Each structure stands twice: as structure tokens, then as C-alpha cells.
Length: 130
Image (tube, rainbow, N blue to C red):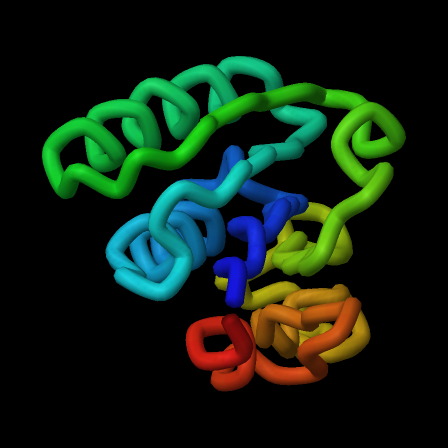
């Protein structure tokens, strides 16, 4: 019986030090995902570059044997993805955390829960499905 090929995982919002770092570390440390193709996507090019360099360092340090790629264009990364993790901030960053009189949910700053799409609908199956 042949082993299934490692999955292609796309992390949208990976340039964020808040969201990207956590998702990235979880994927790269997983033994079950060893050898996966990982795409980092973010519209913040400087943040994406920093997180790509960090991903490559973690990959080498932890011996994860992943193929790391990055882009600011999600359409480049999405074809044939097995899993897509979307972790983005919605709403203006300036208003988050400041007392503006508006509720956190009305400014788009109320929830920072990553969403997943694909064969797995929650982070748990991602680590155990292969």
C-alpha cells in the first residue's frame, strides 16, 4: 500500500505576527504534515517576507522537510490546495484596541478565530487526517 502524498496547505493572512505565527508553528511542528507543501499568503508584503524567512528557519530547525512558498496573490496559491486556513483581521487596524465608543464587533475587531476550508472543517482533523 502506498503512502498518501503530503498535503498542500495554504495559510491566508500568514504575514500577521498575531495570526500567521501561530498557524505557521502549528503546521510546521506537526509530524503528520511532514513534507507538505505550504503556501503563505498575505497582502502585507513586508510582513509576508518576514514570516516566510521565519517559516524557512523553523522548517530547517525542526527538520519538517516542507516546501515553503509565498505570494501576495491568493489565486497563485489556491489551485489544488488540500487545506486552506484563513486568519485575517477585518476592519481598520487603527480602531482595534482603542476606546472609540464603538463596540469591538462594529469595528470588525471582535473575533480573531481562524476559519478553515477544505476536507477538514476544524483545525483538529488537519493534524490527524493524513
